[in-house]
Image (tube, rainbow, N blue to C red):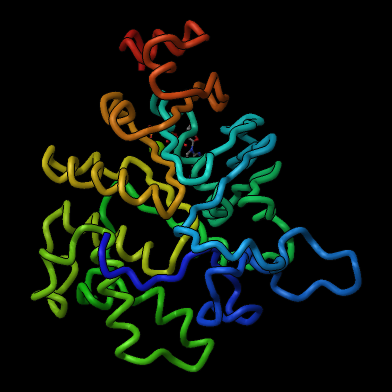
Length: 314
Ligand SMILES: Nc1ncnc2c1ncn2[C@@H]1O[C@H](COP(=O)(O)OP(=O)(O)OP(=O)(O)O)[C@@H](O)[C@H]1O
Ligand SMILES: [Mg+2]
């Protein structure tokens, strides 16, 4: 990943609380509360003090689920899951169709609650900040924890450039706009980081929907990278792609984990084995086990995991 001007120590913040432009490498920030806490009863998510001033690489943040439950109406589909996604690792979530993988990942960035009648219980911590704290800004949560879906979903009428710039413009509006030159630099950096720059640098003003499926998926990854997330959630990001495009995304994931934490849902066991440091196996809304990917595939501790990874069901 060359020519990368994006700042490090990444957590996105509510723009009104902290201007991301003012960040430095030595700052450590969190998703900030919507309103500053009064007195000493503040949540655990305010901007914190300076971290060591070493020239740190960009870092992802860990995500910890504590007794996470997710409901559609009264139907409980994620049933009290404790799970840590370690910073700068790739964690794969596997399990049969309908076991709750997508529901679980949507809870992490609070997309689940957008579904009418749906709600979540328990805690989701981004590093040590509770993303469900009432004073946390949901938009900031979704900038800090980006998402890439199964079907590439670029904004169809927008150009390649504008697709990547969309999130940046949204954040900049609150601060009175962003210069064109600065936008150019950030868009190029995100496209480079997504491994797409060489293919689209001459096509920036063409519609994003005109790219190939694999390019569109990398465009969506660039779009989420542009706002400097700490975590990227990928829900079957390659299931609509051919093997070559899949390989590109997998190589990209390997690179991206230097700068973000990655959670990837996949039905493809080989893919999990190739890209994931750790793998979590879910069944009927429960976490059966999580461990080093190699252990899950070769020496799992639960017989149900073995049955699943050897193709006996699912
Ligand atoms: N919008 C919804 N309303 C009601 N129930 C839902 C909704 N979305 C999912 N469910 C139910 O929640 C359960 C978990 O679904 P989810 O989509 O999380 O499974 P999944 O593991 O991602 O499956 P797949 O591998 O097929 O994508 C399923 O029983 C599903 O029918
Ligand atoms: Mg799913």
